[in-house]
Length: 347
Image 1 (cartoon, rainbow, N blue to C red):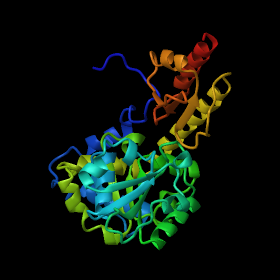
Image 2: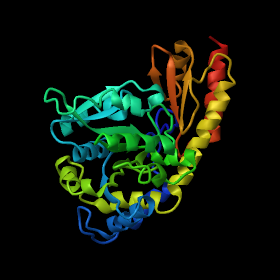
Image 3: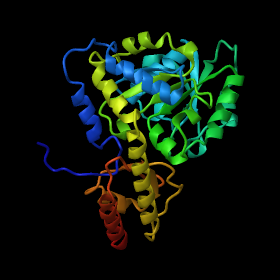
């Protein structure tokens, strides 16, 4: 048994597996099923994906978010091509160089206010087409919700897709926290993916209560044929896929994805409201999904980190990031806020 059980605000990855997802895995742990995705559970997952994203959607479960992004971007690029993304994008800042090392592509990065690309920012690197000396831009990658905790509206995603397609580029969406985005926007996931023109989606499950369950969802049928082979050569093809698929079915077939995301978002709004009331603590941008960013003195941060797990986002600005998850409670937040008040009052 695990001792010293605790909860923190470092990442929604720190949370455990949702009991409904755990139960779904146990329920399929009966008898034999064909390996590598030719099983009844993965077939059912295909139906779930089509229900959310349209009849053209094809879903390919993978182990993790980096794998989903790498497989997606490989399917969208050739060896001499590049991906335009925000400098804060997970594929650039937090994946150990995997997209470039494994996929063999070039990332063209651009500083993006609040982590969001715009057509004008895309145009910074959508140049030099046909120039043999320049890696050719082929894909625009955006994150929903962004690494800065912000959201693209449906219209903003559509504007990006329309602009990218007009330049001959395709669009990838890193949807590690897509459930939180849809819950916050109050729209179906397809509203800012399929209907907006996104070509391939990295569908996140782990940050919303799954164990090791992400997926590549191909929305543009022209890009689908290569994905099974790329998934295998990228070491993202699981043999006992029914257990990965069962998690995603449990999450997305009903409303568990939405319930869990709504709860995490609500806890973030509570945390934001409570800390904004503490003198000396500032929140530089609103909590639009399940992330809260705050600025407070570095000595206070260091003392708080002795009891609570969370990350410093920008040490120069003394800015921290606090994440809420499906299992964050109001009591968790009350205890954390009380500690912040105590440390701020005793500087």
